[in-house]
Image (cartoon, rainbow, N blue to C red; front, side, top):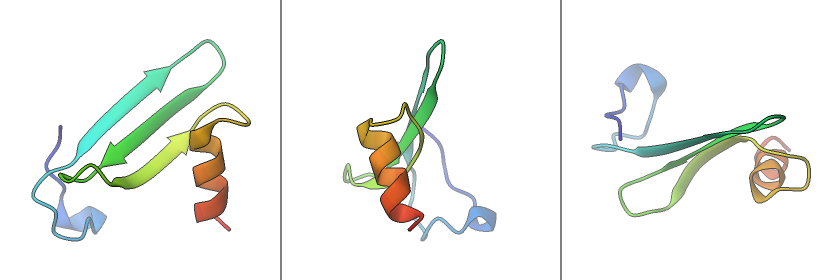
Length: 59
């Protein structure tokens, strides 16, 4: 769990929950707000839910 800094423009959330995963070929992270909604996802193997989310968010 981390407390966002205003320098990162985190929409004034009191805290956020970040989960990191690491594998032999792919690393990924997911950050949630206090209500459990996804703030961001990064990385992930091709075809994974995280990779699909990143592709949609990046256009």
